[in-house]
Amino acid sequence: MYGKILIAYFSASPSRRTEQIAHKIADVIRADLYEIAPAVPYTQEDLNWNDDQSRSSVEMRDPHSRPAIAGEPLDLTQYPVIFVGFPIWWYVAPHIINTFLESYDLTGKTVVPFATSGGSSMGQTTAHLRPSAEGALMKEGRRFEMGETPMAINSWIAALGI
Image 1 (cartoon, rainbow, N blue to C red):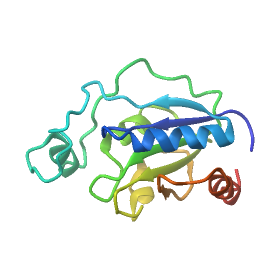
Image 2: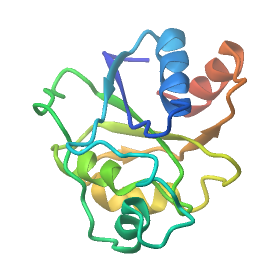
Image 3: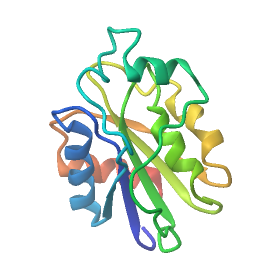
């Protein structure tokens, strides 16, 4: 591996599964962590995918939706590699991940998506994110289970060739 590595993650559910996986990966590869926090936090009602009128359902139906991110922009100049973690929503990344990627010049950087899900695979998630990471090399993403071991994480990192 080369240079500093950032793990930026979005974790909206009360279980904070994506956050837990982000911390596990950061511990294994000694990366910096950054939480992609929405400017308007999601409530449980917002996350109810069974409700067509819930905030997440409305956002995910609109491919141009870009929820705002809280806080100041990051200085990514020191990070040649950026891991981006999120829960799978409607078989792709939540649109706040597009907001994050589109907020920076990622030219020459390597972006590695990872996800958590109750049952969905990565599917076409990586392909859907590529246009938002213009100029970056985006590696194929991976979905993680909660019981991932440091050895499994190390194997995945080694296979990425970064």
